[in-house]
Image (cartoon, rainbow, N blue to C red; front, top):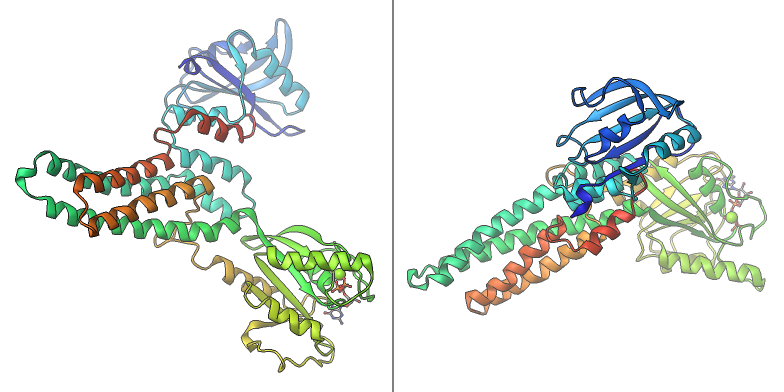
Length: 455
Ligand SMILES: Nc1nc2c(ncn2[C@@H]2O[C@H](COP(=O)(O)OP(=O)(O)OP(=O)(O)O)[C@@H](O)[C@H]2O)c(=O)[nH]1
Ligand SMILES: [Mg+2]
């Protein structure tokens, strides 16, 4: 493959003004190519992993005063020679340094190409590469921790460990098939069953908390629902910690849904304020209310707001009933006012109800804790690690599970060992695909193209 030979370069820091920005090169010609435009120490002679002062010049023109890091293969991010030129910030100067370096020996990198090389050169596997991308995109410490554990290879270690257990069974089974005269097949079948069951259990654990965890990655879709004027928009503003939604004493203030992403503690909430639900003939309000109903269906979490200072309406009783199968928190707002609400006509349990005053910010902490206990429970595995498989990995985990289920059925039905082994091998292969064994080119290309430039 010729990609090994060419040298790539890109600006690896975000565009815009900054104290420094970095032009990164990777490949056989990296040092030589920089040297052609560098005035200072002879970079060919300096020891590896050193930083060197000098100037980048285009012919006689000095472009920037720089610090150049030299990292020789193989102990680098890509396992190739890497040079990082620390420039003096400023998009113009950095761009000029890059365009000076680009030429016959160096080409512009594609998005994600540095990480792709790290993968192709065997320094990281696919799960670790994907985790690098998650790490870049993480918004909370929880997401960051999960990504770090993946980058660190906790997930691939688990997969490799499962495959290790399986390969021993495969070896045993193959011996039995080739040398039936030794008659140890029954032993192998037992071992296969035991291993299959144990692998299935461990996979189920990962699948469970990954599915739970998808919400953490994409944000919890949280709909604030209730009758008009109960304080839904005030609650959004309280959680947003600012004046985001219009609040007035006129019922029907919010007519359209309004979305705002917020982080509370470890969680990202995709918060949606909705139009107050009640009976109306106003066409615009009706459309808004229609959307409110859709939000109840689509939300991961419903915050159902009631007004403590007045009696429940028939529509509110209906809403309490309609949302009972959702993940929800029933909130009584306006607890600063004299309380008139009577919940005896509903079958709400007392412990389901949270009392707040959106106007005064009372109950914020309790609400946060309740949401956290709903979504953070069970997110760590038995080793205290947060391992969140992404959609691609989950698909393969499910495929592995199916194959292993057939193994169990085959063993129970006394299907000949060589046939059961086909499913067992299939499972072993799917697990390998998770860490990128025999990954098809299209998959690799597609995956890395989602990275940002310079990574
Ligand atoms: N006393 C008191 N008033 C509140 C509280 N929360 C909201 N209000 C008031 O209740 C009125 C309605 O608040 P909004 O937040 O606009 O209510 P809403 O549910 O968004 O109303 P619509 O958008 O019309 O459906 C405003 O006058 C708020 O100031 C509270 O905790 N205590
Ligand atoms: Mg409103």
